[in-house]
Image 1 (cartoon, rainbow, N blue to C red):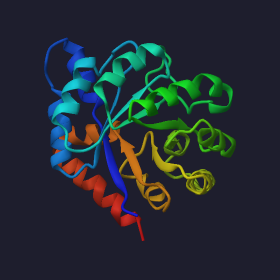
Image 2: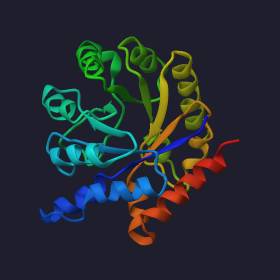
Image 3: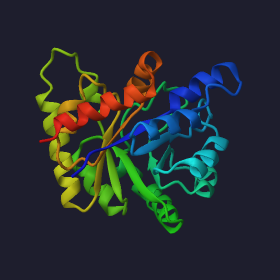
Length: 242
C-alpha cells in the first residue's frame, strides 16, 4: 500500500492572520505542496477562525487537484460552513478555544449519540468522514459503529516523547489500533506532531494509508522551501516502508 502525505497548511494562515492582511496565502502554500508531491491538503476550520477562513475552503476546493481534508468540530456551525465547500474528507476533532493545538482524540464512546447524526449528515452530502482518535481499541470499535469511513490515529503522545526515550510501547499501541481499524473496514490515517526525526516508526505501520503533517513541515519550509520540505518528508516516509 502506498503511503500518502497530507500537508496541513494551517500555520501559513496563522502567519497571515497575525497581520490581518492577505499574505502569506495558504492557498498558494497548498498548491506548492501539491506540486511537490503531496497527495492531500488538510486545513482545520476552527470556531474562532484563528487561522483558516471560510473563504480558504472555497478557494482550495476550486483549485486543488488532490483531496481536501477539513478538520472541524462536530457542531452545527461547523457543518454549515464545511458542507457547502464539499471537501473530499471531513475529519471530526475535539476542539477547545483555550488550546494552542488539538490536545487529544475524540471520545467517540461518550459522544456517540452526537456523532452519529453528524456522520450521517456528512455521508449524505457525499463527504467521507474520518474521526481523530487516540489509539484505544474501544474508541476504534465505536468509530466503526457510528459508520465513519476512517480513523486518524493521534500520534501526539508518541511525538511528545523525548528523542532518546524508548518509544516501542507507543508504537505498539498505534500498530495494534491500526490493525483493528483495518480489520473493521476503516481506512487508517495518522498524525499530530510528526517530524522528519520521528516519522519512520509510524510510517512503517503497513495499515496506515496517509500521514497528515503540518507544523514541522511548514516550519522546515520556512528555511528550505516547500518543495524541499515535502520531498524530504516523502522520502523519509517511503524509506520507512518495506
